[in-house]
Image (cartoon, rainbow, N blue to C red; front, side):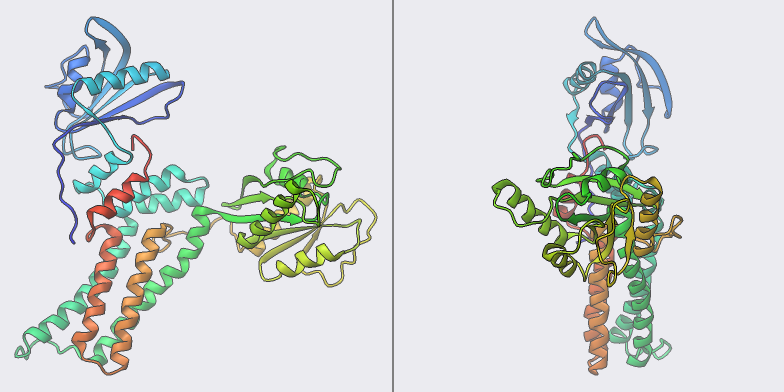
Length: 455
């Protein structure tokens, strides 16, 4: 299916700022009747005002003044949605914001669905699908690197990259089609397996490089799920609090204080560690603590990075050895905590450990450096358009890669060129789905339903 060309006849409205007691709230209205609808409730007729102008006045409910506002008018097609758009900047109280929105809806607008403004921008050709997804990536960005990734998508750099791949596929397809449909054209270069094979291989290598970088991109965007594990009372919660620079977890000298998962996030070198402080692992008859221990083991299995905490003042026991064994194949840092106490732990045989105190800021910095080294984190990643962080886009790129690999297999098996062309065509379709040149209504509805209200 090709890109949808739906045009909406109705006008939509929604609060575009957080619905809370703020200094300012913005209510956005988009559609062919946006200007006339706002004119019904505004103290000034906006029907003849110029685009990109701001107007001072009052929102009125009949003779009653509701709020003193600034109204900005953007005329089609020079707006985010390419429709007439009006933004009402009102005072940010929850009651007054809802009251202004209510008046806009009563005047003829419909309440916008989640992501509907961005959806209209896409359907009206203002942005492509990668740019639409980058809007949400920018909202959700929590580091400089994730913001840079979002900006690459928003600026159209991701689209350019995918279109370049798609253009290469199209040129191959066109040559094959000409040879198949018009074999009598002797002037046209004959596309043989010998010429097709290297072209497909070269394109496949480019796509494969982007897919490899996508693993880094996913870490930049989503962070690294990190489990802090160990026996009770080894200092896991103290370590969590030290990394977060806040007292998130309760710390006592009573073993088994942490009985459930405690979570937090910390930015290390532009990458977010999603920290999980788990209950101490030990044999216990306490029903609640037993559930916590099982959650701890599950968190360890699901984590990408494990911080295993051992007690410098205690010899290794069977629980320590079990945790060392089940985490050995994970990306792991061993923290030997409580360095200020007498050393009773045999450090021989421990790999990649940091001897430290969770209460020493210099030791915390040392641990962070070790984590950065282990995870290959650089403070200034050289991020360019070949880093794609969106999971849907990566999945479709992998589909296109498999299509090209299947086409190459057909050539290896001496199959006719037109058989390989079926898989090449499928690659072209999958690449088109990334930027929205090929899309279904169900896909578009599902994608934009994940957006926040007012965007």
